[in-house]
Length: 278
Image 1 (spheres, rainbow, N blue to C red):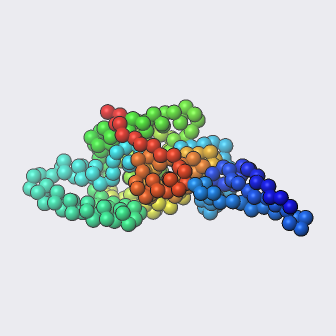
Image 2 (image 1 turned 90 degrees about the vertical axis):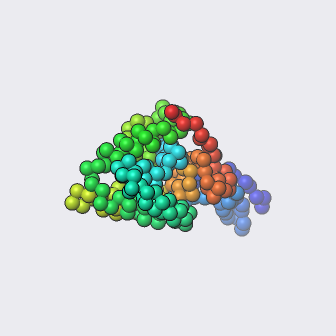
Image 3 (image 1 turned 90 degrees about the horizontal axis):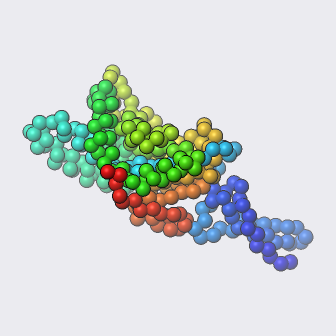
């Protein structure tokens, strides 16, 4: 018999729609899904055990490079330098310059590996300094680097009923002031272990990067009755790709070359933020 092309909404498909080819053979109707270039295949939510759909919707944002033009290394170095004498700075600056070259290589290989190694630099810092460091980093580093377009996007999505969630490899106490300023609902961030009143340099759980971001997003959706198929995610690095795949409406912001190639293959919208809020 003839072959019928049927456009159908795929209830379980992350892209929310799919093409299905239907035909008859020996009196039996058969059908199969057709993969189309640029359409996201079903999978991330189901592979991670995401069951029923929630009633709410959320927008998940990476922070460094997406909401702010920042990274995790510079604020740490700035905070350390402000407490040093000139003779200490004389050896610390060249030392950290060399470390940054190593960190850059590690980050290219694996963001998860880089985070685990870099955060060892916090070992021995008094836990009581966290609040002071958070305010210093926010006022001198993060706040002047907030993207105006990111703020406008967050405000628009809040008006449309989205819960705003930060998903970041940065430490939770350093991101909290930014989250409060922008009215973010939840922060899913790295947390550091404390022992005898000092930071150990070890993270509680896995670094928040790569697949771990997607796991946290899926768990958040399950805990807060969020429908991931109607939710959005924003990221700038290929380390965010699993998070982007976990939602129905991903968006790349100022993406790296590798992420932009992925976005082109999956027909994912790309934004270019450049103007700072102040």
